[in-house]
Length: 540
Image (cartoon, rainbow, N blue to C red; front, top):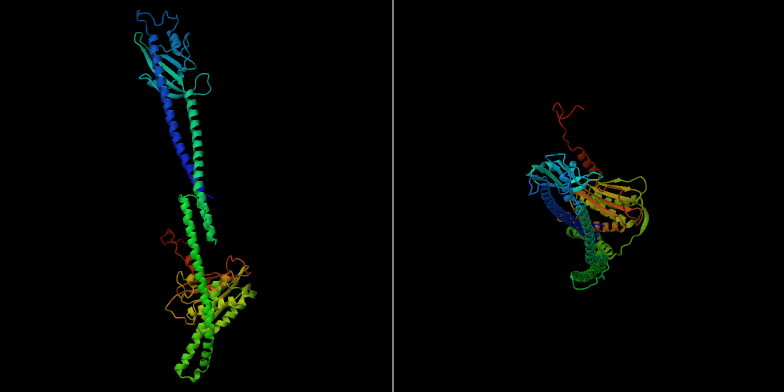
């Protein structure tokens, strides 16, 4: 479906590219928003922490009018000034408002004097932060589990020092800013990006589907019209809508179809004229040929009364007339095939009997060429529904061809059969065929060697007619050959008329050639690792 549907390919490609783009852009936007929100919160938290440290320093310093008076003495009467400082910083006093962060104040001079708000304990301060806070104001984002809570919270911890010169006290001040609101905001932003990205991908896929549909539908209609045109419906045309590229494509297709229809009609008329001409000429030639044949027979019968030159001329004329009659008969047969008028006269026949009759007709020619036939026939009958006359003609043509090109060597004729088909193979050991000639040998008037004269007076149409006869039976006529190895022609016919062939009982390549190939493959040298004694093979 993927290979056949252009629309599916376009939509899928658009969908994949859209997903990639949306994921990249969404990740980039999420990171940018996350960075912006975090940095803004850090800056705001750092400012608040700095303001608190200033306030803490001011609250812990002695009053200006009485340098020897303790800090906050007389303000609220608290036993420890850190309590009042914590109330001021965290907004837990009478007029203060509860702030969003917690504070931890550690007294370096007097470690026991420490104060914290909320669930903060000194152990919540990261060691790395506490190590660096003595040098400068630092901050870090940590997962901190506060007292009384089951899950840690993402918290921004800002640490700094407060030094009170008049008292010599040093304080470490840590502010804990929870990022709960920021996490919620970023979670909503990520959800919005995912929803918008998914909607954008679906929208792009829908747009790609509609655009592809607008383009693919006319192309699909053109393809269907081309298939109908190729099947023989020459009146098939496309509807033209508008003036765009697809409309011009439809116009071009219609013009092509019209021109193609015209050319096909012209070729059909020309072919009909040619077939009619061959048929008429063949028929018209029969009358004068009959007269010439009668006169030639008289001259041939009286050749002994002529002088040697005239006698030889009568013999040559007789031989050429026989060849001319054979060629005329072949031309008439070819014209029937071209006109589609050839029919079969089917009968159940034992193919072995047909082979024997064809060999009997070829024995006289084989004796003149000092050629012998070697028959390999099965013991069981090879019954098949065939046209006896046409199959016998095929075998005669194959035998004559083998005699002509067999160089006087033996010709092997093999008959085979299985449940569905029968086959006859004619094997010669002559000059053979070159590469590609196994299909050209069935062309009309084709010769492997144009300079080679026909020794048995063939017309050059025998194998072409034989192939037409085999095709008319629904069978195969195939050739194999190698230079110097001879050739083999195999005729395969279905046992039942009209049945489809699935294979042949006989191999197209001669068995001895197959055995030779197998032997060569088996004898291919294999490099073995050397043995311990260096002889190249072990004892076993």
